[in-house]
Amino acid sequence: MPTPDTLKLSLGPVLFYWTRERYADFYREAADWPIEIVTLGESVCSRRRDMKLDDWLGIGRELAQSGKKVVLASQTLIESEADLRDLRRLCDNGEFTVEANDQSAVQRHSAAGLPFVAGAALNLYNPATLAVLAHAGMQCWQAPVEMSRADLARLLDDCRDQGLGQPCEVFAYGHLPLAWSSRCFTARRHQKPKDRCRFVCQQYPEGLALRSQESREVFTLNGIQTLSGACQDLRHEIPGMAGMGVGIARLSPRAEGMAEVVTAFDAARRGALPPPDPLALVDAEICDGYWHGRPGMDNTRAG
Image 1 (cartoon, rainbow, N blue to C red):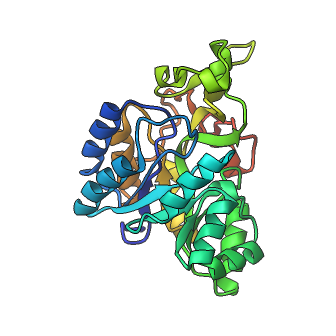
Image 2: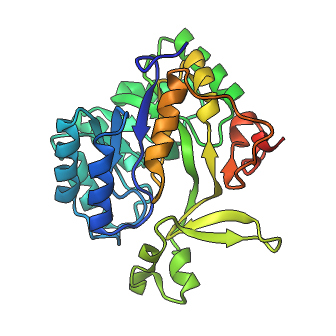
Image 3: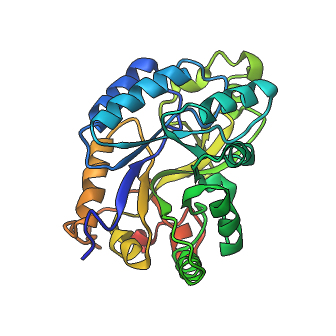
């Protein structure tokens, strides 16, 4: 039976644009949740300037005092010299490890001899690439969100055969990050240019649903980022993850109900989560297709 020492829970960065007060309230509550790792920072859009690096560092220090390991997320899409300056400041923060979501962050850490976490956006699919990043200072890596359970199991076996022991983290809960663009889709929805967006994405604390003609929520728009319409939920896969050697399960923050989500995943890793009831009503917002080698928007629990 998996134990908390076998598989850790991590809280990913907030992908949406919240107010300063909402961030403060959220992380104040998160300090008491049964999670080991918290990743902080703005990883989506450089125009979201309410929270500065010093603000994130302050929250990080408070979480560290509560016993959490704190990681700072780098921006995924670097578009300007100003973005690079912000990235340099982040990488040189001197306190917390950085999650590198772009190759420029990897290069910065490698050149400085600093350890880093390899984010899912780096698209790591084989042990040769992982070996290169391990040599560059990678301490932990995240599986691509579209990688199936079977493919990840083979990759982890290959890594063990080659002596690569860095922990693997799997995106276990939340809207799946699928793509980033130089265009801001939320601003366009409001007929505003990207550079004069008036921060309309702050009106959508869980993103803007994009529906098909059949009214199915296919995607979630989050500024320049496109997410899945439904939330991936792998809580019932946690024992299997621990058995195949996954080290960390990532939970991506939502605006409501995260305490209950964390509690359920903590129960799952302790072997105390009730099995799914096939007769229960299925939550239409759930997807787990990628994990099972099917189209990502599928819900295998729906049969």
